[in-house]
Structure formats: structure tokens, C-alpha cells
Length: 148
Image (cartoon, rainbow, N blue to C red):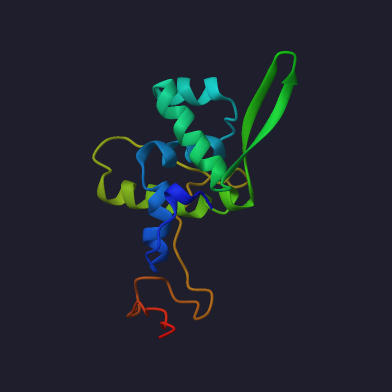
């Protein structure tokens, strides 16, 4: 893990937000999931300054969310593709989008559809252990035990 983004907080939410808690990073991941891979594609889609995009792509690459792949040798050009960790972030993005539609849906929103059925998806978070929808049962945050 990139040391400058290393967060010692025992909370996994805080540790992830140390490098992902930025609007640009989340939007880059959104665009990567819809198939964008090249610097210019991200820049055009997001309207982001090249220096900011360079930093965000570097961080996402250092953290193992994206990886660089050479797509042209002459001239040398690289693209950014999702790693397994990046692909596993898709449900998080979908949950953020669903929350946005419900609580910030005062303007027409992009709809996300299942390709096979053509129907809008309605993501929910389910606890794999109990099968219960997250938010329907009481939860607690348990701190790790210290060695001392």
C-alpha cells in the first residue's frame, strides 16, 4: 500500500477513504467501470485538470485499484484497467448511486439497467452471513484487541 495514503485507523471505512474519499477518484472508477481506460477519455468525460487526473490515476494505481497496461509501443502509451479490487468496487458505486437517486434525485438521473432484462437495477446490500438487508438489524463496530 502507498505509505502516504496509509491510514492507521482500525476502521476499514476510514482506511479506504484515505485514498478513495475524493470525488475525482470515485468518478474515475465510475468511468473505468463503463469502459474508459485512457487518460484522454477520463479527462474528456470528467473535465478534470490533467495534473489532478495524473495524481488520482497514480494513487489508484499505487493502491492496486487500477493497473497500467501498454497499448501502444510507438509512441509508448498506457491505459488504465481495473484490477480485481477495482472490479469489486462496482457494488459500492451502485449503492452510492441508489442512495443518490433516493435522496438527491430532484433532477433526472442516469439510470442503470441490467443488459439482459433491460430493467433498472435496484441494488441492496445484504449480509452474506444472515441474509438480512444491511440497515434492518442493529450493528456494532468492534475495535480490534490490542497487544498490550
